[in-house]
Length: 70
Image 1 (cartoon, rainbow, N blue to C red):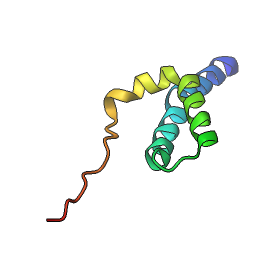
Image 2 (cartoon, rainbow, N blue to C red; image 1 turned 120 degrees about the horizontal axis):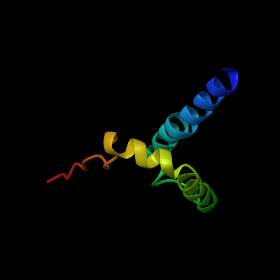
Image 3 (tube, one colour; image 1 turned 90 degrees about the vertical axis):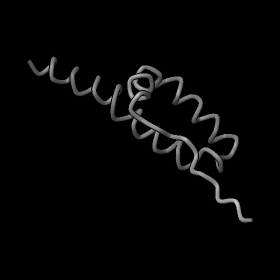
Image 4 (cartoon, helix red, strand yellow; image 1 turned 60 degrees about the vertical axis):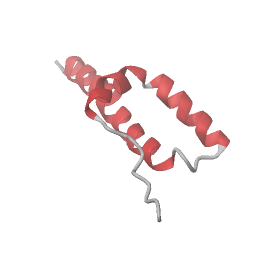
């Protein structure tokens, strides 16, 4: 029973918690990241790809609308 609970916790972390945190991090740092940080971002997206696919229909990460002054 403990092993099944451990698998459930680890899979939930891998598929929901870590990709959700990565989405928030990418949203805040995408346009200001250094090259090393961007390399780490690409690696984490590749590593957490199944969870990113699961969360993608529910998240809207479009850039904020720009204000154009007349």
